[in-house]
Image 1 (cartoon, protein in one colour):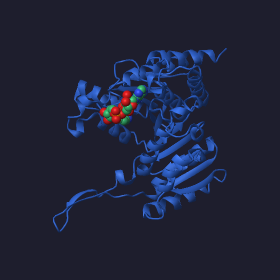
Image 2: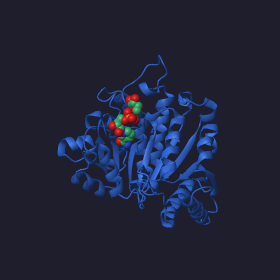
Image 3: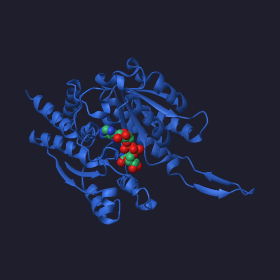
Image 4: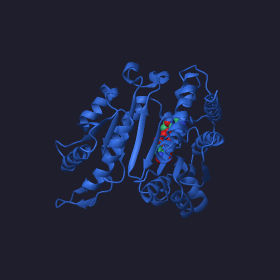
Length: 359
Ligand code: NAD
């Protein structure tokens, strides 16, 4: 596999370095990966004036998968919108046609008390939120501002999904449910929105081809409530772009540890961009204390979805669970008074845990 590595800004380079060490360790074990690094975001703006230089996009397009750190930082907040680091990320997602966003929310037993919910509600949570990423109200036209007859300004956006857009994300959802516990909950607002009525019809129609997957439907307001009431009732949640944006953030916070959650954005051929869900954390950048596990777990997703290498993905996830049960904690997941390790020590511990799996 050819992997384009885009470290980005802030803690990005520090955590990506640890993820690369994990890939190098797997390479020693015979996993065939090649890595090439390129700038994105603020780092790319500093170097070229563009947050997504043509050479970075070309590298990403030629690769089988992209591993990203994070972009952004206060230094870039005053730039014109088109030059901001986040534009680099939005543009690469669009250019690569990444319409599926996968965000697992996993609560490791050792960290159940990091959640804002009671430990018994979240211990063992293993939820996958599947969000459509290139349609819906975020991209629908017309959108804009206009002036009403009475002189009052009005803002407007258009929510829309075509049947084919719904169908392709639904197929991904059912395929993923098949690899897990064969339950899929589709989230919509079909009691109010025409877009959602079509969404529900098409998901149901696609579901007929997956009789082994149990399909349920839930209104988004209820889903938001159920996620904090009894999150373990869900396995895979399928959502449109806006509902998924909100629910995936809600679900990630159930785990209480932003430094642990990976994500994947995939195209129609399972080529993907893999990144931690957190940002560039400028407050701790350069201190060597960032938690690299979300990025390391993003490598596991990369190998599973773009590399079709379930074995290596599983090995990485087991190694991460091992270091957590061995008691290693970066500052973000440590209890008050608990001793902590830095990014490099955490990365090295995962590499060591991988090596121990052979014994
Ligand atoms: P953030 O996720 O960067 O940080 C929020 C808090 O979580 C901070 O206190 C930070 O120190 C902590 N944190 C985040 N990741 C951590 C890790 N791996 N280990 C330990 N602690 C961690 O969110 P923010 O502060 O709102 O945003 C900072 C910058 O990141 C902004 O410029 C924002 O636009 C950008 N951002 C980028 C992405 C992305 O690249 N996908 C996503 C979100 C935010």
